[in-house]
Image (spheres, protein in one colour):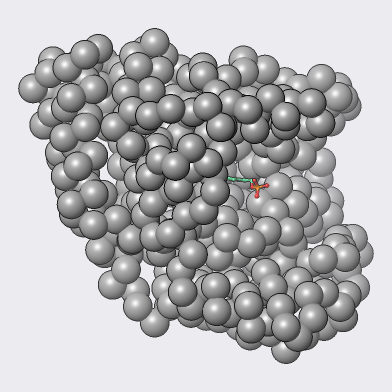
Amino acid sequence: MLYQRSSELFAEAEKVIPGGVNSPVRAFKGVGGTPIFVKSAKGAYLYDEDGNRLIDYINSWGPMILGHAHEPVIRAITERAKLGTSFGMPTELETQIAALAVSMVPNIDKIRFVNSGTEACMSAVRLARGFTKRDKIIKFSGCYHGHSDSFLIQAGSGASTFGIPNSPGVTQGTAKDTLLANYNDLESVAQLFESNKEEIAAIIVEPVAGNMGCVPPLNGFLEGLRKLCDADGALLIFDEVMTGFRLAKGGVQELFGIKADIVCFGKVIGGGLPVGAFAARNEIMNYLSPIGPVYQAGTLSGNPLAMAAGFAMLNELNQNDVIFKRLDEKTTYLENGIRDVLTKNQIAFTINKVGSMISVHFNETPVIDFQTAKGGDNETFKKFFHGLLKEGIYIAPSAYETWFITDALTYEDLDFTIKAIDTVSKQF
Ligand SMILES: *Cc1c(COP(=O)(O)O)cnc(C)c1O
């Protein structure tokens, strides 16, 4: 496959956009080479500016769970656009999607919509601080909660690819209120509570981590976090920006039966438009402006096009929850296929999978946290990425990312992918 046109477009972009991209991982720094410019996408496939068709395993980093240009979502957006695209005033649609989300997700009474996952997590932490009247938060190395200042401390994926654990521009003052623990290591969390008694507002966690590859919580980890929070009076924030409306209707709370105090959403909830949201029980949500003291706002929050897309998406997932089972089956099929060919070709690897999130690590050892995720062989990953690209398969251009399986993938696509992985891994 040739990328002449993409290279030219990238050169033009670099002149007027820093690094040629509006989000760093897109620049291919983790794998080398030139980013691919997309022309269009439909179902499970991307069509690039050079005339290639690629099977897409990223799906806009999650939102396109039902495939690209999904008919009901596109219809909802186009119909809505004719009625005006933004008012800065309430619409009935906002109540409809809020009511639907609240009915699908356990333990939430109210939800507030914002414009990105970053905003959702940032606002959730502010709310937790206001509600508990405490300043500190605990986050886990390798977990990503968007690019707001408090979170850019060992933030996984994008940041890790570039080896910048702490971004310049984040002040010492902000950094000192973010305490770091190790994923799947309850002892590291218990120690932080021990040395910061009644000072911690919240733990924020990806309940299934997806920004250091896919890293499932070990048995008892999430239960343990719940207990530690309850014992100290801290809140437990589940960042379900990636997992929400993907792993189950009700996200990880439903999947593993663990109760969070605040839940953050993004990605799927916007159906491919820029949407985030955070939600909690009444007692907490009523702490928010205009009825409570914690301020939070947005000119385009609850934007009608975004709400229409999100509503169409959630509606379909709600009415058709066999989708989650089907996604899980497709992902298991892919997992087994990859396992077989990599074993046959004598490659050292680990595969992690939860529902429709999966990642392949070129590691000898299990990947359970950021430390072990970083142990993967990046040179092999680069060959893997570029090899698959030649075969017409697009996976994330970084070893620290999860693949997002879409329902639009057919078993033929999966077989084709497994065969390509066989071909590529023979040449490692
Ligand atoms: C993607 C992601 C975010 C950030 O969402 P944006 O919409 O990119 O701001 C936050 N948390 C998690 C777990 C994510 O995967």
